[in-house]
Image (cartoon, rainbow, N blue to C red; front, side):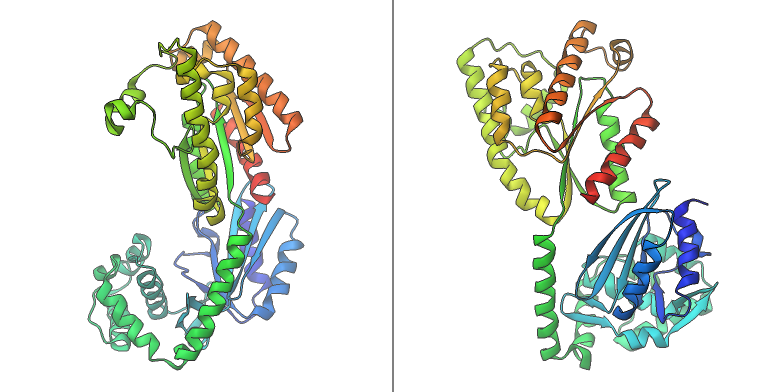
Length: 432
């Protein structure tokens, strides 16, 4: 049992006397909750200080973040053994300005299951359908599977309760997908309830806009870059880091290749975007035959402007929306290995111009011995690998002393060790 599971077990013992309801609870036991799932708990705002005290006083919690809002408070817990848990303390079940399930109604349908307070299957089904349809989605497969495993008599009760309340006629399989007609019918029923009167919806709408503005202003989206010569294992590590961020830390992630790409690659003007990208993907690195200084300056300025304008675009599209942006290569390639982009310009000038480029929060340079790299890819000579790796490390050492952001070289020989190191650094980055 890891520290996450130990904490969950301890946590529910501590809050046993509180009036709460654990939502979307389908596990056989509280410690069997999926590692990628968070805890959604409906309770009174008055319980928040007690919840925070439990978290703060737990020895195995290395650090935690708190994200408050008008309708909920989120806790992000990082444990000493590397495990992670998100707890969403909800004060009401609301989608924008519509309260879709009243708290008193949930409490009236709450019972104790294996020492944990949760709600009935009918209430669970209603919650899942309303939440997902209002968010233009179907009920996730794991919940459909849960209901399919129940006795047919219970399934019949669940469907009867829902169909009667919302005056529809659906079967279990119907809710796997989003249906505009079903959503419309649900909204009609919800708006007819006193808790969703016109005045109340207006008040809720104002609070929703207020929360949205706060989230935008306090957004903590980050940029993380991965650099390395071909064969250093960069693509594999980046892919696993993306999976880690999405599944474990429940972050929205976008991967960008080398630059913001507000502008297409130059060869797209000659061959068209699709064909140019295909040629670039199949061509070996550092095979360009450009020898013109003027052409090199033009190419560099074209991509440099893409960085200057694109970083503004990335900021508004992703950073303000709390995304983690992962770059597969970054501006550092122009400084160390401009030949890769068929460019021959003064490295000193390119390095100085980095002053105007957005500084990512975390920059990782993966390297290995030429022997190890050549086992993975035979695209560069051992001499070239050694030279480029040395220049990258020198650059990262220089920037590490000059800028406050992290510039970290990683000897990538053991994937497990590399990912563990990156996980720890990412945790620091998320908390910063």
